[in-house]
Length: 418
Ligand code: ACO
Image (cartoon, rainbow, N blue to C red):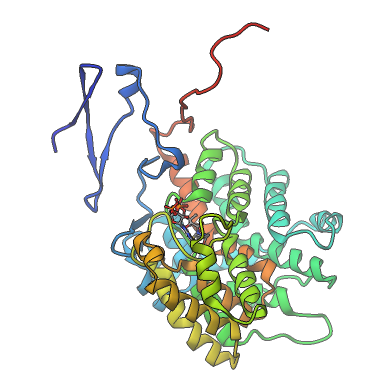
């Protein structure tokens, strides 16, 4: 394709065109500033590509999400989370030998250093588990320093994936005042997590198969989502050559926010408020439309998906099935369905192309599994780990990679004297 032409103040500049493997078009502005003195301005980066990437493809108009070329629907139906993690991080689905080794590594690195238990003791019982997770992941860098060589990095990737679920489960046990439960080597990745979450020393705990299945699917659906807020944070921090643990810890903090992963916790709190208020959905739809009310329908809207979120579509179908298998009836599910129906018929939501996102139904399933509300975003973080790691690794291995350093348009005072 011919270069784009930009005319600025009577001068013409050529901007090379870059075309992605799915036909996405980008204008390369890397030389624009040095040639013209001008920068581009895009608050919130909605129209800005920050990198080349071969990991995840999203087409927001058509509701397409693929990891390394594989449609999310197929992966969610046919694969285990550890296979998807391998796919994202190393580029291809593992063969049997590769998968056995990967599973073995994830199993045998799941213990955290005993000294780290003292950190948990220092947190107040009411500490939010996302704050604990972020701090503990950052502290892993003190135990497993990164000398910058490839072998250290590869091992730290395994350690992070293996230990994060132990840390997440310990933070929950701490919050309810129960003894920590150590990982078990005979269980799968997600069954082991459920075991560390729910087992108590007095009795044998066997994770219900329906819970294991649901968790497997939820983790896969959250595993990557290209350059969203938390992933861009991981890349931003990592671009200064900060170590893996520091970069991912920053991603956990970014995910915590209500407009990002923190929305799943807020969805359940919103549904509960509506239920407690007599289940009057229309009142809350009206409130969300009122420009003077500081209220949004949590779990609705997405920066990229403008027709539907394929993950939400899968989860909506699964919520009924999973709750049925678990024998759970949840009045919040009825409210969620009604809210969705009413909002989707409403001009306000239609005009703004606001649809349920992945967080809308995930909380209902987590609730049915008995996972406490303040752990929902931690579940999201566990699922997102392989994506963050893959994106960090891709950035690190990019020979043309540079430190992230956006510009600004200064709008403050011009020079003045004291
Ligand atoms: N409820 C009511 N109105 C909404 C909602 C909502 N959930 N989301 C967006 N709008 C409205 C805005 O008020 C705005 O209306 P206006 O044009 O009249 O001013 C318009 O839709 C566009 O909204 P923006 O905030 O500009 O959209 P943006 O792309 O910046 O934000 C976001 C996307 C943050 C997801 C937003 O839709 C939102 O706040 N949703 C609720 C929180 C949520 O569910 N977050 C999870 C996202 S998925 C994820 O991170 C995994």
